[in-house]
Image 1 (cartoon, one colour):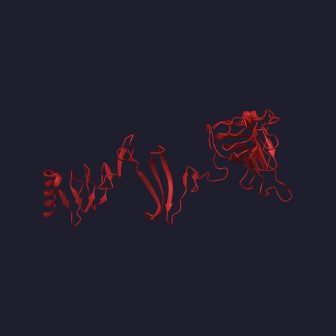
Image 2 (image 1 turned 30 degrees about the vertical axis):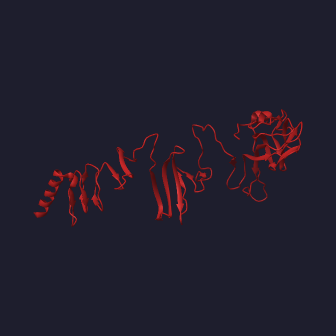
Image 3 (image 1 turned 180 degrees about the vertical axis):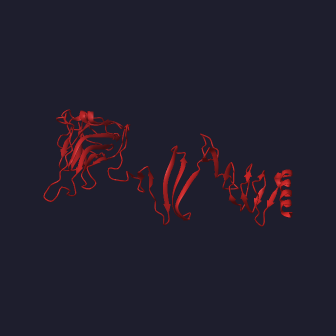
Amino acid sequence: MRRPMILLLALLLIVASPAAAQIVVSPPTVLNSPTIDSPTITGTVTGTPTWASAQTFPGLTVSGSANVNSLCLDATNQDTCLVRDAVRTFGVRDGGTEASPVTPIIRLYKFYVSDTDYSRIYMQYVTGTDTFNFLTEASGTGTRAGVKVNGWSFLANNNLDPGADDGYSIGGGNRPATIIASSLYTLGSSANGAKMGWTRATTTVSTVNLAATITATNLIPAGSVVYHCSTRNTAAFNGTMTSFDIGDGSTANLFANDAALTSGSTTNLVNHLSTFKPTLYPAATSVVVTAVGGTFGTTGTIRITCFYYDSTAPTSFELGQGFTRFVAFLYPSDIATPRREHLPALVG
């Protein structure tokens, strides 16, 4: 009978003086479903206690259910808190505003030995890019893992993988507007290795004083079909010349005629000769910039980018001994001779 009386007296003291109240439960004692306003509790509590406001519980063990409106895991700083946002919805938040956001981090570990030896995934808001980052990282003996979402995998090398050959498509009933890439291949089969696709080669070339030409050596790879070359002056040219032409070493102005010397000036497909058409270059070929009306001077730099098609031959037999595999990539049947107007938009 003495123990219940002691507990009742302690509860009465809490009501009378909540700011200084303290319940010390030793040895562990069962407190069945109390509502406690503002004490500090040490010991073990079982049942379904409810704490009406923020509490500090050093060394507290709860067996059963603890019903709280929020849970902060740092008694001193109160900056790492789980909050009930809605029905069956919890949030990790710590105030902030649109102008001054906070950046909590959620981490899930594959393993943890120490702060310098782990493998984990984390989500965090990054103010500099205004994005929520969902990334994997590792340290020490750990290695980065991939992330899989509905069959698609973000591999540890940051490549996006469909999980199986011919597994999934990008787009369905709705089509993506634009795909921007440095190269884009269409695979015939992962088994035989045949492929073809758009790609590009780019470089910068600086002036050579008193030179008649400057050259992007072997910019066009052997075996490629060039669809166009574009340029931008990243620094203005001087010298005695009045302009320059851009070509493939055989036709001096194939890609541009009388291009401007000023910084930021560009050439593109519209600057090509009207007779230009997609051209196969069996051997590696240079892009040559030729001075018009004089020579190059001491300043000037040009960036040159060529877009082309190339292909890779099959690497295995699948039709039986004595047969030769071939892969044909065709233009639409209504195009007799592909020309500039048949090209898709390219981003350089």
